[in-house]
Image: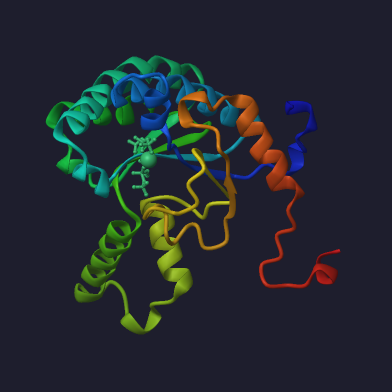
Length: 244
Ligand code: IPE
Ligand code: IPE
Ligand code: MG
């Protein structure tokens, strides 16, 4: 599969809605958390695959603001899994020169999870390869509101003239503070929606939906998505003739 990929046209930012863990477990007559546990191998494989391709940013949607509405046992289990996984994966991130970057309202996570995350961020901060953005307690609307708040403060302090506010200024701000524009967005499990993911950054992303449930997702599924991405004509409003 990998040989079919054009190395000159690798999406610089891939974002993934890792969905279908619950259904994967249910198919096996197991509890939902069994699916979450088995999602870790998919995360490892995908991260490694992206690093191999030379992707610059990989953003993984691990826990949404809306996911707090799940039963407490599931939320607690997810948080525990998060705490243990981050700690365990740091050496692998180091080995692969990957920088860890959380995305979301981290201060609302359990303290132990915050501690491990901060540790991971600190330890990997000098890595120069891919950046792994982990979206945790994240929602697109929350992110936009937070950016607006930051910009409003700059205006208030006189650092920014409100008349200078523009799409590119906002872009610059959001890029630096959170994540750059997405080129390929993948969602697993057959659901066809955005679920409050990177609302600003997905503006011109190529969307790829697959029925594969997240715990089954492997490098070859990633490569298949990249091959599909490379077959698309990204016109950005222009005509096909203008591009050729
Ligand atoms: C995605 O899988 C993981 C999280 C949202 C944390 P789900 O848990 O949503 O799995 P399904 O959609 O119920 O199958
Ligand atoms: C989106 O999946 C969030 C994550 C993958 C973390 P959900 O399973 O929570 O999304 P909905 O509720 O089906 O839209
Ligand atoms: Mg789901």
